[in-house]
Amino acid sequence: MDNLIAILRGIRPNEVLAVTEVLIECDIRSIEVTMNSPEPLTSIELMTKEFGQQATIGAGTVTKITEVEDVASAGGKFIVSPNCNEAIIRHTKALQLGSYPGVFTATECFSALSAGADALKVFPASLIGPQGIKELKAVLPMSTALFAVGGISFENINIWKDAGVFGYGIGSSLYKPGKSINDIRTSALQLKQII
View 1: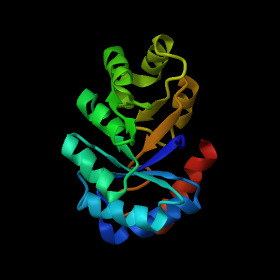
View 2 (view 1 turned 60 degrees about the vertical axis):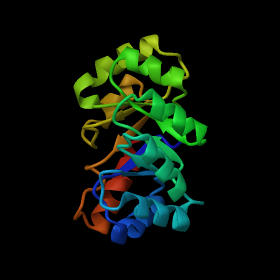
View 3 (view 1 turned 60 degrees about the horizontal axis):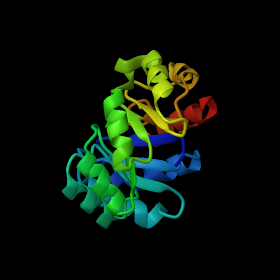
View 4 (view 1 turned 90 degrees about the vertical axis):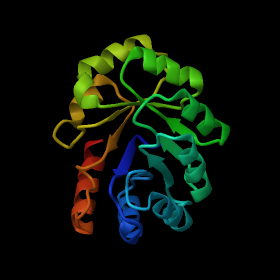
């Protein structure tokens, strides 16, 4: 998995192909559509049919097992959740999808890993802070990939890099409804330069 996941929250099917194309042009190849977006499964299906060979498309804000099945049917390849739900993790892995659950405490981290998570989404990272990331890394297996998600932007990405995270989930500083394709391109190129 790429160390930068573009989080498309609120995106609509009629704009998803243009946004995906520009992200791929900027070498961002892990892209999630959140399940609280308008018609997320339609967007995921369009993206995987058009760009499935060039990017890994998945779903975010997944909170139900039925959503995992729906995403798999739409062609999605990974599941990101805001919380640590072991049943969702196990079901995700049973369907051979990537599992990236949200965690905040050491207890949640170890529960997620025991259930089969591929990487951990530390969320909201802005609350735990870089020092909290360092403390978690001290007790987790060295091979654990931590993604910082929530409050990550151009201005502060270096503090997360210094804390030792594997990657980043970037939402509103990269994409938000109404942002032009040119502005998305500019943001994506800035991010790739920093990372």
